[in-house]
Length: 265
Length: 323
Image (cartoon, rainbow over all chains, first blue to last red; front, side, top):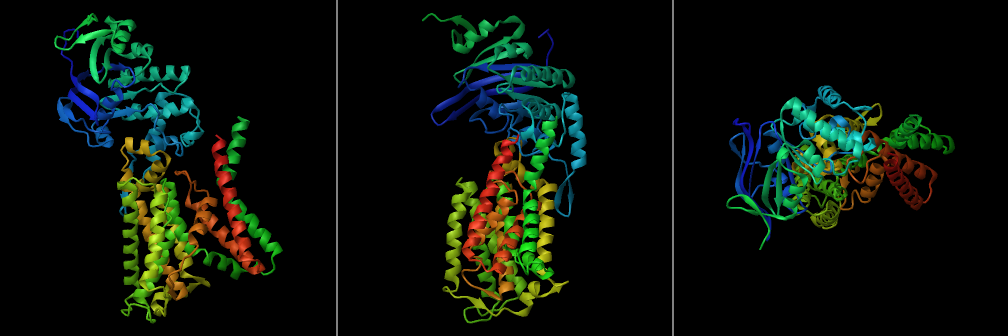
């Protein structure tokens, strides 16, 4: 790229994963560079979610290695992955409706102080940080102490995204972040992704079914099919049509030379 | 905007409904039932709520974490008979007559162990906690009967009974103890990482796991705590009744569940607070007292209590409709 050597944030090397006899991922390799948004696309069952789950520490790969900034890593659990700088935004938002915005923002990373063997929540400190984060995202927010289940869809989205704005350090995995949203909220999310990237220079992987969104914010697009990476395109030099043909398999890939040829059996 | 405001008021009312009902009922009883109005009777109401009160803490913790522990009743019964068996000196006692506080330690240990057993089936074998604790509820009750061959044990040393016999301002020590428990456990629930995690797990266990909350460890601790609180309740029962029978604590489970649900703890997990639960506990005890004074058939109690639970459940689902 531009002849410059860019730092690799994440390297996935020959990763495979089976569920019983089902091959979910077969020898997947890819790289994500510094300050880059990678779109990960593919049909249902292509292996995107399995890959995201491996990257976010939900389960380990059967074979293959992960490298974070050049160092080999094994994620023992989601919290392990988070501690190493990977933040995931899940498609179902993964919020606790019974708690307020602050508590949701700090799930699994509550600020505490030890006192008499008890870990006492530092509520004032968390309130302060939460208010900062939410104001940075900048929507009308009624109260950080409102329970999430009483919030509108857009406000909930703000809370869910607040997590990655606040905590994403090295790499943010966005798993269908707009799947459950209306047009206006979707626009807001894409805006926020672009803004966060500009402000923090953090790399992202965006999984989406919506190619329009992917083309809007991704620099590079990786296509998966049947558990394999079947193509990789720089956004500016590809078209949605080409990506669709890769997704559906209308373009077959010669894996040895990594050159594509149109099907002619 | 106005609509939002009125919704908030309705929400507040439903969240605090137990205290409103409690105040209305106490006032009503005080006016209509002769002999209800007296400091002695009010103290009595609270005094008789201690066992249910402490078991209610256990069940609340479990329910808020999205689990259910039905076995608290028989764990309390077992705790009562074991402490009487170890410390008592009547015919069917062990004959060792050990120190009451050593007995308490043993009972707490048994409670913790039984809690671990519950947690094992729930967490390792992934069985619904309702089914697991329903089984242990029956099994532990059976063991309690086996221990003394179905006989009761009495004649505890005076030192055992101090928690009941010492009175401050005419109020037995165990009443103060219950309020201390409520204060401490409410604080833990609202102000510590452990308590926060209980709410998170009850609200959305998937999110809890994904964001790095130690789900299994937290639920294990909840079940252990529940067993220990139940064992402690058993020890208190032995202290108050100067002994125990294998049927001690019989019927406490549904009384406790009723109190907890009326107190605003949701069966679906993640919702509730001990400030409401204590209201539910005292409410149940007040009903008891009224029915005793009026000498109504005890079966009416069941109807009233059941209806209250039903009302509480309806209100709980209403709350969710009010988004």
